Amino acid sequence: MINNSSLQKWSRLETKSLDNQFINDIINGMNCSPFEAKSILDTVHKVYGNFFNCSQELAPGKAKFIVISAEDSPSKKLSKATKISVTLTINDDKEDLPIKEKEGVVALRQHRLSRICNEAFMQGGLLTVEDIANRIFCCGERTIVRDLKDLRNKNIFIPLRSSIKDMGRTLSHRSLIVKEWVKGAEYTDIARKTNHSVKAISNYVGKFKQVVALMKDGYDIHTIAFLTKISKRLVGEYIDIKAHSTIVLSRKHELETLLKKRM
Image 1: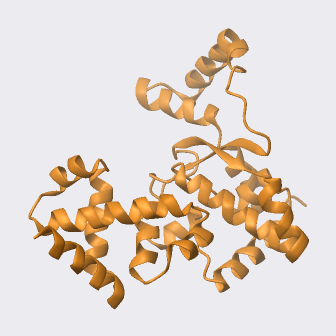
Image 2: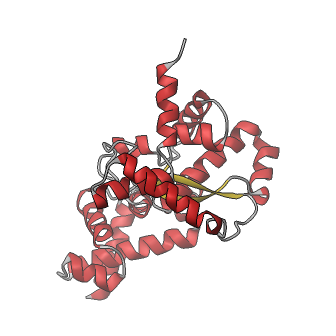
Image 3: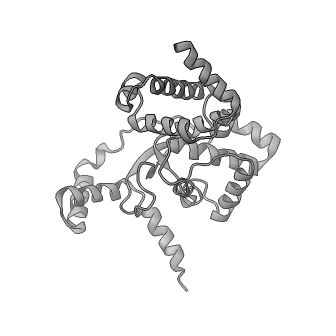
């Protein structure tokens, strides 16, 4: 007996390819049929195929994957969603071996799971449980679901297409990090939780402080984005965090001290 849900799963996995993205772009851009778009794609492969293998060599332990763009609405069908290429760290001996030695195989898999999800998110993509189980770790989906549950119980945020969907409008990883900071988390804790460097987190928080200060001075979103060299969307997210997030007393004091220094 054929398992229809299993067939649907493999169909979803097949849609996450650059070929599918090319076909969708041709259909939408040239208003042609799927058959015509596929014929164009076949011709491109025939003529330019030999030039497709000149990509930059990846560092050991890293691999490229095609994933769904974080910019797309979670309600969009996978076959219509924008696909992007991301580079993920599958193995890092210096980082991974000590974890396996001290904590075991399960802890290592969960560490790698957190790392690749955050790497994909940082590059503008979102992984799914199907991606991780079938395309990356080659294990059962139930195993990944259990790992995700364990990580949630440890208050470790894992950006997946499903979890971002639950959050509504997609937040950038920078905003998610700033949200941790305003709640009182220290740089080192955020770094461990999100697989970011302390330097990167310090930079994100610094930009957030600049946005708050410029907003207090009465500048509009367009000007703030220009002055801070970040996107208007990110400025909007930072302003929303300042207006609606619960900010612990120590962080409020830090922001107020910054504003007083500017006066």
